[in-house]
Image (cartoon, rainbow over all chains, first blue to last red; front, side):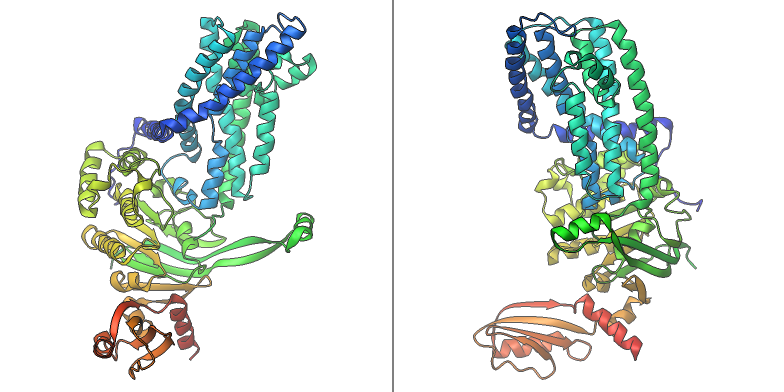
Length: 278
Length: 329
């Protein structure tokens, strides 16, 4: 029907403005309750305290200076950073998509003039930015008090930030695929549970991968879990050019694989959407 | 003759529902031996809607109303049949179609819950790529028409259901849709809020010539709003005609419930059918085309001390049963 009057002003800039607006509203929503935001950061402080106790005892008992190139101070900082990065990405995109399918609000979110995948990505990034600021500030202050200072290099900060950006893309895509499975199966919590445990063990959230036996570390460093938060934390606490190349290539490979998988899952899944309720 | 803005031909949608026996062993068995039941949510329906029409698409719960709307808007894929909405195929051109349609799904919120409505409106102005000047003019107009000025900066979670519903409808209208799909817009609302929403719907249709596809199982919505009514049951269209005919043939009666101070033992009204009587409460079915309500009220007020009164339409299930009854005759 060609005579439809249109009000919108199409254009490339307009197309991207909508995604920025989605990220903005997600940021506003995440920061609507300051106390809630601060309470979310508390868990990082508690974990930082536990890791400090645990690794200080382990290093001093065996009179260790460094393990896998990391001092005890670096280990605690690395863990605080991975915890801060990971906590900032909660709730999982998969939780939100599953909720949309179960509650029926998918009828709105999928039915607007935007890419459904990009809509969730920018919503995710708005949430991340809101949480990351508080988590990092509180985590920094507390870790500084607990274990002392660490010297960050400009290369570490620069490439740590770049790899963190890609790390969040990998986290988002992985979680999005799990969420999209809710188009076929109603409950994806079991898959999400396996994913979160994979992240915990191989993602440098409990033990920095540098401390693992070489064979296990070699495998873990190729898995997507380590590419999310361990990689930027490792580069931040102890920058190493030889690791940077490996990490960037591995991240790029996972972004491409998961990106294609997400797109394919969405294209297939939308034909199977079955929304609960009237 | 006005343009056909929606065309549906032989539309079907079947769902596969997994069956599981009760208890632990039922659960274990269903893992290895999955049984599915096929449900025909929409069963070979055809209809069209003209530009500017206000169509009531009604039926009881589980009749296939929402499934049809979700196929018309491109969310669900039909099992077979064809749909054209504004010339688009909703499944293949969902994003293009989305610029020209608006939807409100009953109690499902589209406004961001922790933020004031104005934040969602600003977001939608970007999502629909609206010219910001035109958006402001449109918003000002809708704020005025829907009387939501005082609600714009209040967090959505603090709004009443009626207030929220008005704000939800505004969100669906910012981009001047040609068609608006309203799925149970008055569900859960009190009488005043319902009236307010109905006035707004009427206004949209009459003044802005928006085509309205309204589903409801409240006969009051249909009576006051629609010129044409389409009734669906078990996925099939069982009535498609003017609302006038629908009212004349199937909403002949009203249910009047009276609460009186004292006993209802002596309550006797020959022109109505007493269908329920308790100590202080009496429910009368009245054919209003024969006996006006005020005749009953005159009798009741003369002989009893009335404490409360409600007037309702017959339930949708009863209307459906009437349609079937007439068809079988």
